Every structure is written in C-alpha cells, then in structure tokens.
View 1 (spheres, helix red, strand yellow):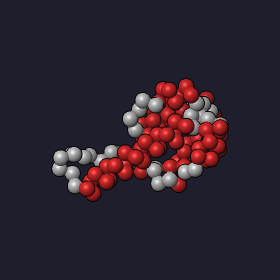
View 2 (spheres, one colour; view 1 turned 135 degrees about the vertical axis):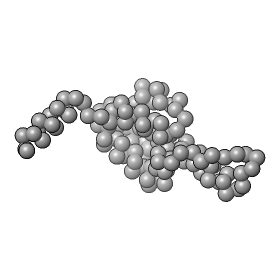
View 3 (tube, rainbow, N blue to C red; view 1 turned 90 degrees about the horizontal axis):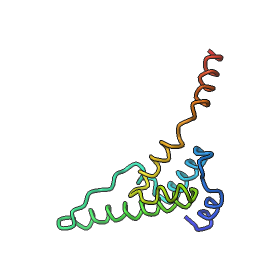
View 4 (cartoon, helix red, strand yellow; view 1 turned 90 degrees about the vertical axis):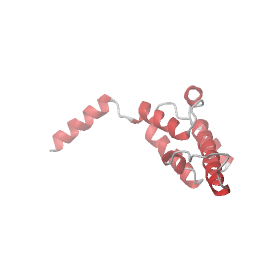
Length: 121
C-alpha cells in the first residue's frame, strides 16, 4: 500500500462518525495488501525449538501482516482512539473493540428502522 493512500485516509481520520464507511475503507486496504486474513485467523502457534522452517515462515508472515494491519488501522483513526487502541496486540482486537463501540446502530436508529419495517408490513 502506498504512503499516498495512507496519507489520504489519515487526512480524514475516523473519530466515531461514519463507522461503516471507515470500516469498508480499512477492509479494502487490507484486502489490496493481502492483510485481511489477520482479522479472520488467529496467530499460528510456534515452538521455537521444534518448529520447522515452513511453520516459522507462516508465523512470521502472520506477525508481519498483523503489525502492518495495525499500522493502517491506527493511522486512520483519531489521536484519541489511537492512544486507546495502540496497546492492543492484534489488529483483530482493535477492530472488534471499534465494532463494539461504534458498529452498533444507536437506539434511535434501531427504533426508526423498526418503525419503518412495521409501517411497510
């Protein structure tokens, strides 16, 4: 991913507004850079004494991808959110906490959606 794209996304940092658009942009970045798997797969286990080179390579790839995904996520959120989530060990944990905090529609939006659904029925 080019620095230009990161700079463009960092220009309008996510601050709690427009979560679904922000998440879509992050997912696009992660897919383009083949990093999205770190949001779906847990870190592969490794035992340094018995792991063969293939196991180490898989582990190292996941760790590098996770760090890069974290950097992309943290670069595109507000400084306040960044400070709160920079200590999280995985990109998956950061995204899960952001989803928990911002991904749920507010009660007024849910109420309005239910009202519209009832009116249509």
